Amino acid sequence: MRKTTINLIIIIAVLCIFGCNKKENDQKTQSQHMDNIKVSNYGVTAKGDSIKKYTLTNKNGMKVEVINFGGIITSLTAPDRNGKYEDVVLGFTKPEGYFNGNPYYFGALIGRYGNRIANAKFTLEGKTYEIDKNDKPNSLHGGKEGFYTKFWNIEPVKDANFPTLKLTYTSADGEEGYPGKLFTTVLYTLTDDNSLEISYEATTDKSTVINLTQHSYFNLSGNFTKAVTDHELQINADKFLPVNETLIPTGEQKEVKGSPFDFTVSKPIGKDINSDDDQLKKGKGYDHNWILNGNGMRSIAKVYHPGSGRIMEVLTDEPGVQFYSGNFLDGKFDTKTGGKNEFRTGFCLETQHFPDSPNQSSFPSTELKPGQKYQTKTIYKFSVKK
Ligand code: BGC
Image (cartoon, rainbow, N blue to C red):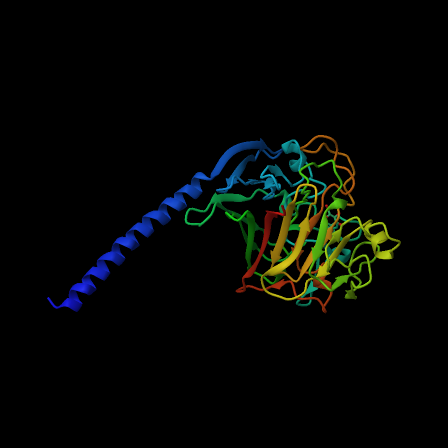
């Protein structure tokens, strides 16, 4: 045999062995990821659905707990500067808190439309749709039987690189007044760099509107009785959307510069929250949508808690984020760390399209037509500052 042929055979043999090993290793990692998802019984709803809890764990010991009711994140741990993992998301102490209304939308998947739609109606392709009016004249977070009240099918994903849950829900044509049968898939992935990645997909059989989001409330101190006003927040947005008395955007896109809404440079959430400002009065604090700079997947916000050293960075491909400073938390429920869920003890950064887009033609469209695929992704990444 000629020397070049022998060399070729050797190279192919080495590649084969390497390839087989890689496949074996990949399979091993994948099955390890399946080991990093534990399923347990969580509770039974009034309708008799038996609800399971799925616990994802990454190689650092970070944990995320998700239930198949509302796709709700009931717990998420993150390390402080001493490496101590603590729960940093608000939630109820008992399953019934979630099953009986979840008035704050704690931890939930929100659909079909995150945020408000004015007067609970919109017109699409010449037809007017009336949707559930659950927030004075408006519709909020998909209506009172929105996705956060639904039973989601959950499957651990076998061939994923990190522990991943696939959640699916099919919303019937006309549910809560929205047109089209909507097929929704959400992936929750916990990566080894302490990120929770959330990928949303949906298709419809009739033209409709859609704006999915996640409604976790964070308190990076790990103590849910403490106000989040000491957390330092930065949002990459030069403009925000002022609102009317019922928190519907007026249509104006206002510069944040020189106002309490300027988070372009990191500052404590509490620094300007009590300023004499008409918009802050309307929201009882921050409860507004910021128009994010740039587009595509990008870092849009960072929160730092000086006491613990915890940092949360948010990345998304969405055009907006609702920064809500927990102004409607009212001390009616116990927190997971004792005491009550008082005013401003949690904040949300809900990535999304702008509120009321179906009624505001100058906003990026939230329409979804048959044959199109709705796709969006958000990442909450946790780290520390020493
Ligand atoms: C809204 C708040 C609302 C809260 C419900 C947020 O997304 O912006 O106005 O009260 O959800 O918990």
